[in-house]
Image 1 (cartoon, rainbow, N blue to C red):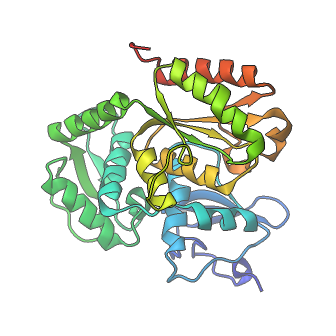
Image 2: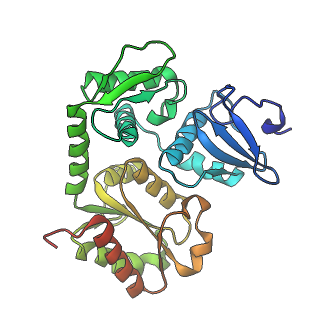
Image 3: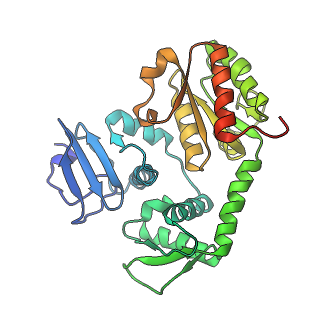
Length: 314
């Protein structure tokens, strides 16, 4: 019997939160729309089962769903295939990265400097990609200790935390944005198959270089690092990512997702004959749909100039 038919109407199947505020609605044949105060909204298809409450996949999946909601993207749709892809591709953020993500989420909720933002530890664990309330509180306190946010009242216990970004916090966010804008590298995520080699060596490299950036693909230069560590490092050092999903390689989706998690712009590309194969989770993004190499180069260059901005020395 599937998990969703066990009658646990007040428990979220992803984050395992048991709460009266959880709502389940029929979303079609074998599909349920879940509204959870922690994960927010998502749809489950085929009444799929989830991992045990002790699994770390639950908190990460909850954080991914919440992030999609916070960014006002399409409501996440979970299927067996989706979970398999996510289990391979969800990022493992470190404590420093989680603090930055939390601060950026607080900024997203702040309409003007000085505004008080309410953080409810019971429900807002995913804002820091945390696994428990204690971890979220640790990151909140860490940001307070770094003088990036401040408490606006002395609430304790399960009640909301009233906080606001400090002047130092706004400076930090501005410097973080400026640091990103000063980067000159563009990371390219794409299939390494031989039939797409000319696409990398021709239009993609040319469009990036003409706009004033340095293209980087992990197999293009010799290195002795573990390939996954090299990928993460190069994405972190990049201004933006070009993700060509032609070939539908899971690694490309992972690299693009990691970049999105860091707040980096991702320019999506796909060959026209594979447009229908694009993973449903990324279809809401505007794709450069190309047929010829000249077509790809022209569109990619225009996208870079319009979205990222051509470098002045280019």
